[in-house]
Every structure is written in structure tokens, then in C-alpha cells.
Image (cartoon, rainbow, N blue to C red; front, side, top):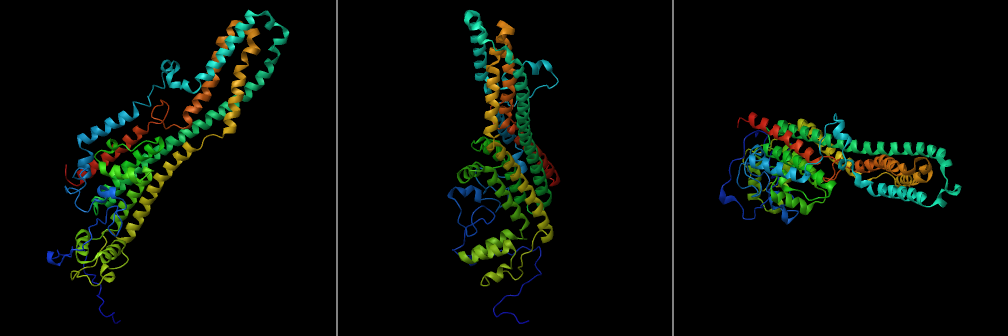
Length: 460
């Protein structure tokens, strides 16, 4: 078939041969300075002026000192496993969690029976004090004034009704505590899934992407580690702590994320997707090819050529045929397309799963038990306990005060425990989830993967 006049034929003989270097005299002064594997737009304009450090990602070797000044030069296993980075992360997590939650010996009755602060008395302290004060006041008043001991104020006949009310109240408290426990466990299960999926995603990136695109594999691992910290910060509504990802991200990258994103976890997930896509769409000799395109083509031509090459829609020569390409140039994918598609689907599922588990905890935090149920339960509960001295003072006498105090402590304590476990995300509560520990666990597993990777690469 006759070819279009002036069109260049596709040369499929080029496989793993990198394009030869271009003479410096042929380079145009209008070259577009852009890192196409960074976070800027395809046309070379960054999406935000604070992205300087974020854009300078993996255009050069990870060992190059031309990387962000905030990110130490070297392979990821060198920066993340460096003793200074490890110590900085440990100190940051310890300071953030303040040693909470405190682990206890569940087999020790002595330790668990005589706990006080860990019972979260602040959630029901004022209500308990009010019940005790009312009991003491009514008991003292009946002992002081004989008029209050007349039949008019004798309410002992309501004792049977109290038994029925207590049965109903017991069912309501059990349901309330059960729902709070389910919410607590769902949050813990979501964090467990985040740790597992992070490990699986990083391992898949190292094993499958590492041999063909190590820089992108490292980039995915970096932001996967940052994802867990981002989830913690979103749930606690706190700033992203750079020290907790020391050795993984640079300070400028963290500052850019804080400037551009309100939801740190979604930002990290986007970065992971970009790294995975860049790795699976990579072609042989891509770095030199990009430099050649930028040197020879004006702005628009370079943009279209780079986009065509990276998305594999066509040969870059067919988009801008005026470029002086080497005689043997046809971009060849580093990974077989069908295998890359399957791997991309697997990694996308893992990333989507991470976001889904983050959303589960956000849903739990934003959705409380319906106010109608909570209000009704607390009204009946307070009414039941406050009226105890009026019904049983004739039986118990001065013993009414300690009896009411004990009953109020038992019943109000259940409601207080439910309130404590309903949204378990605070770093100041003993019973809340140790999210700092979960982030540390993720980093420990990733560090183990990096150690294996370094050993496989023969650099140990």
C-alpha cells in the first residue's frame, strides 16, 4: 500500500537499544524544561508553584544528588533504613502517641479490677456526682424532718415498677454497648486491612516493577508508607508530621502536600497511581528519548510527542514527523502490555481498597448513633438512678447513699464506656486505637521488604 507522502515508516527493529546521543548543536533553545514523570502538567507548567520538590521525582537516577534537597540522595533502602531516619521516626511516633493506648495484662484481675482513669470516668463523672448528691440530700432531709417520713412521701410501693423499668433499661444499655463495640472493631479491622494491603502493594511493586522501573517502584513505596500516616492525620484532624516519614519523603514534598491537599490520604493514593502508571507504561531508553524530544521540538511538539510515547497511542514520530529521530527509533514497552494491564488492575484494586478502608473509618467518625436513641436512653437512665433514693430510702436508710453511688457507677459506666469506644481516634484516650503504632507496624514491614530488595540487588 502506498504510503502517505512525507510520512516516515515505522521501524520495528529497535528493541532494547537506547537512542543515540544528540549533538548539542542540534538542541533548540526553546526546549521545555519538564520532568514528565513528576507531578506537573504534561505541558511543563507545574500545577502549583510549591511543587518544585514534588516534580523533581525520578527523572534522574535515585542516587543522583540533583533530587530534592529535602530528600536524601540514594536508593530508598539507603534513606529509609538509615539509623538517623529510623530514630527520627521512632521519636516522632512516641511523642505523638504519648505512650497510649496502654496495654494491660488481660489475665490479671487485680490490675483490671482496680483501674480508674482507664475507665473514662470523665464521660459520666458529673452525672454520677449529681445522683450521689440527690441521694445524700434526700436521705439527710428525711432523717432531719419528721414531716418527710409521712405516708405522703412513702414511695416504697413503686418498687415493683422499678424492676420492670430496670429490665427495659438493661436491654437498651446492652444494645448501646454492642453497637459501640462493633464500631470500634470495624475501625480496628479497617486498620488491619490497611496494613496488609500496604504490605501487599509494596511487595508487588518491588517484585514486579522494581526490575524494570526501580525509581517508580520506590516512589510507590514512599507514598504507600505516607498513606497510613495521612489516614491518621485525617481522622485526628492534625497536620502531616514530616518526622514520621523521615527517610521516605522530603520536607518540601510534605509541605507541598499540606499546601495542595486537605485529604492527605487521597493525595498519597493519587501519587501511588501515578507512580504505577509511569512504571507500567515505561519504554526502553525513555530518559534519553525525552531529552531528545525536548531538545528538538518547540513546546507543543514536545508535549504531543511525549504524551504519545507515554500513552503508547502511536509512535512519537507520527505526531511530530518534523523531528530528527535516530534511524532506529520505535519505543518498546519494558513490560509486555497484557501483563502490565493485569498488574495495573491488581495494584489499582489494592489502592482502591486502601481508600475504601479509610472511608470506612471516616464514615464511622461522621455517623453517630441516632440522637433519638441516645437521648431516650440517657433520659430513662438518669431518671431511674435519680429516683432510687425516693423509692428505697425507707429500706436502706443511710445505706441509700453508697447504694445509689454503686448502682450509678455500674449503669452510667456502661454508657460512658460506649461513648468512649464510639469514635476511637483520639491520641489522648487510653481506650482509643493506637494509630501511631499501626503506622509504625506498616513501616517495619516495608523496611523488611527493602532489606530483602537490597539483598536481592546484591548491595548488602
